Image 1 (cartoon, protein in one colour):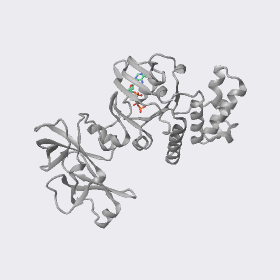
Image 2: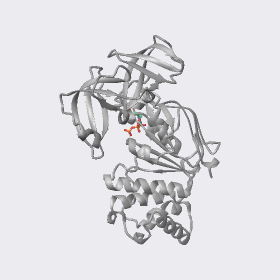
Image 3: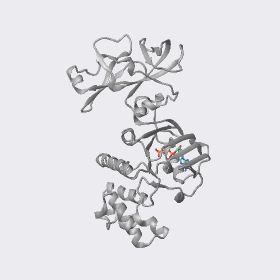
Image 4: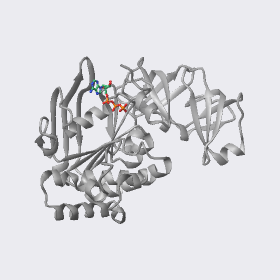
Length: 371
Ligand SMILES: Nc1ncnc2c1ncn2[C@@H]1O[C@H](COP(=O)(O)OP(=O)(O)OP(=O)(O)O)[C@@H](O)[C@H]1O
């Protein structure tokens, strides 16, 4: 199945009038991978998904599934199934008939399609409710019917557009586990569009971060989280502070950067940078300590402007005069051993190894795009 369900997107552009919804995108999704596409509203992720499904045709470029060019192939012939956000179930049909519907359209015999639908309902643990109609189900159960219906044609690729967004927090976490289990069992490619960073990080083998019709970074969740490509990815995925400075000198493989606050920062393994260059770098918020004195290197001072208790950790927000709020995630025990209040001046410091150079130039803040 693996090679058959591999997807190659080659130089794909989609124009709606003058809007470039997708802009010359190149992406390979390995067969059998769980891929999550994420980005602010309007960044083009649904358009890309719909082009893979065949509900839209690219203005230019090609889409290959299992090595076959399906750019203009009919929706039903390319081995994909799309699960809609609103589930789109038939209200007057039983679960069995809902799931079997597309087999009926194909002319599969009544007994055979019933049998196939029951097997699929069993896979999503709903066989005991097979004779109910959708209105007699909870939101989570309706979603599982929609999944069974999408899977009945044995697709090579399952496309999910915001599949968990209609569910409450509890069900969302539960369904997240089920989606992953199902994908493991079936061994097919899942492409899941989401707005929610923790969802992408938890589910995906490959996270695709988009902005303004472009892919900003496509990599494993750990790579995206620990080694964001640009200020945009660092901010959008969260958990990072973004700082700016000018390269003062190169010491072996370390770039020594003069921050705007007069403090120096040591950036390990900063490739392709030169003295005099302005750059940005990120520091993980949970790798920062508060010290009694101001750090001469790899630190900064600021005024506490907000404190939020999160259960296992405490968010301490600092105003630093650098234009962007600086956030520290402190271990709750460390925080309560030496608590700080709003208005206090504190000194933050971290290990130089935590400084990560952001080579990408996209400096946007990840807010929704307006046309
Ligand atoms: N059928 C259409 N006609 C005209 N413009 C469209 C059409 N579909 C999408 N667009 C535009 O293309 C851009 C990308 O839209 P798309 O729906 O792919 O974004 P998205 O990232 O999925 O957003 P959301 O998270 O809000 O669903 C937007 O500017 C949108 O307004």
